Length: 120
Image (cartoon, rainbow, N blue to C red; front, side, top):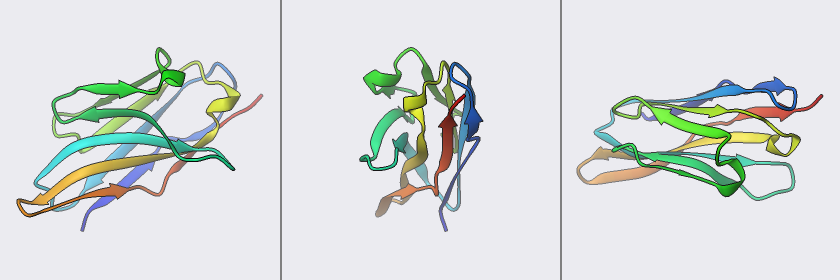
């Protein structure tokens, strides 16, 4: 059974930093891509950053220069370093993994989310 688990959220002052972690476990053939999304109350879930198995990264314009995504070689552990946090970064942050289970089975899996609150 595949599990995607986020951790690292918390309460931080404006300008502060956090390191969010996404751990994927289970009987997995390959992880193609891992992405971080966030959802603030009353707003739609939005893509924050993504990283492919080969290491290509992509960022939302709102976080470029402040957030950095990285991961180990097989992307079973992916990290989102969030710096220079602003109150508008407050949201639940979710990890999404595009996973190949077998040669005939592939799916995307979500974690339960980790809350980031930026407030003085």
